Image (cartoon, rainbow, N blue to C red; front, side, top):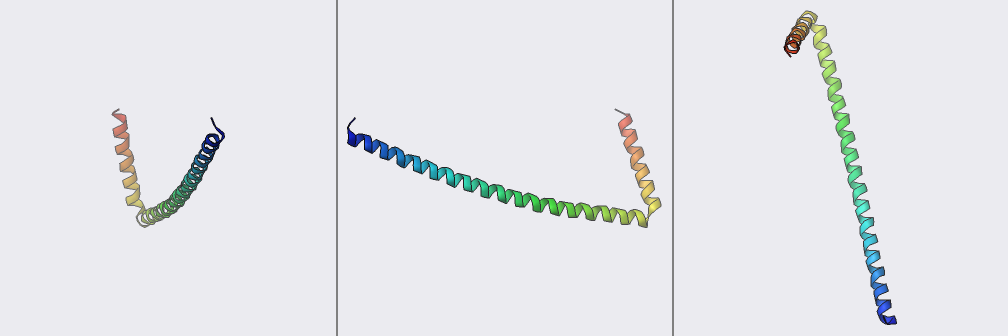
Length: 89
């Protein structure tokens, strides 16, 4: 292989290596950006679900306080129904 051919191959190899390195850097940046976006979305969803769960517990507590006998009868009926269904297995 002549010196000129060797230099040409070496230059092309360097160019390909730089292109691959740039592509890997860009892919890494895109992946980090996607992970950050996913993390933010998951955090927001977790916060909203937590608020809804807190509100549901508060609403249920209010209903039980406003009608304790009705709540007790409903809970007892559901417990009896669950017991009957589980006993059949």
